[in-house]
Length: 115
Image 1 (cartoon, rainbow, N blue to C red):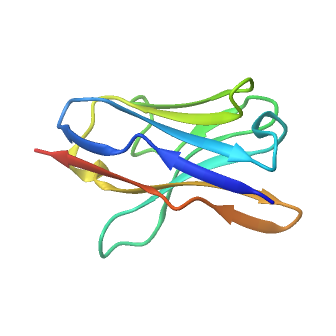
Image 2 (cartoon, one colour; image 1 turned 30 degrees about the vertical axis):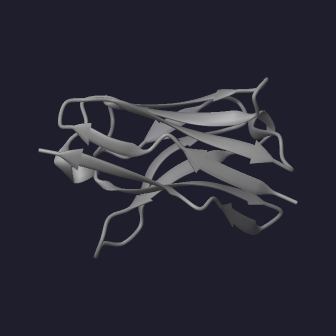
């Protein structure tokens, strides 16, 4: 059974930093493509970042140069380091993976950036 549990959200000031974690069970994060998405109130869900099984990363233009996705195989956890936070980064952040044509999502963690 695949489970993804996000943590690390909270309140940050503009220009500050937060690190989100996505602890996985039932899968091996280093063997799968893992993604972060976010959804702000009243807005559609937005892709944020991806890390593939080979370690290739990609970012949405809105976060490029500020956010970094990484993984720790020993902890079976994916991270999203968020620096230079902006008010518009305020959203609920979700970890996601696609296994055998089925999408798995965590419960999300709220990030609120004060301007």
